[in-house]
Image (cartoon, rainbow, N blue to C red; front, side, top):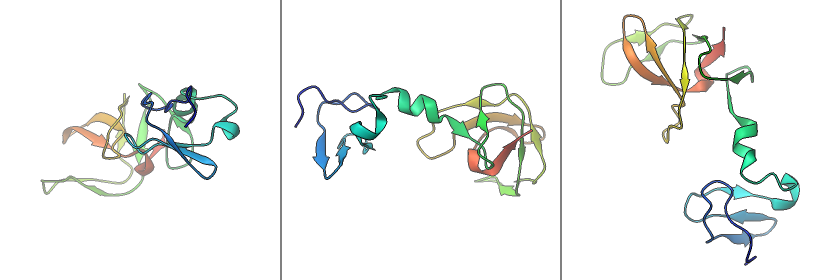
Length: 118
């Protein structure tokens, strides 16, 4: 194990090498230090949250839902084409990385793969 190498995602010292990749057992993050060119913790910030078309999203953007989405635990449906204003990016462990309020439904979380930048 490399003494100075830490996980760029969670900063854990308990990392191990598997072939060309380094793996963190605490957060399951995998990376290649040579391919990153020393980017380290900046990797996640560079990638950011992207919509279905690959456009970068940021807090306060407006997005459009691209397909009908069922609201879990309810009979409501968010129709494709619904415009959502003033989104907030969050780090959702379940993949829902956009927090927003939708007219007629209320506060909810969306996955960025089901929206496009408006």
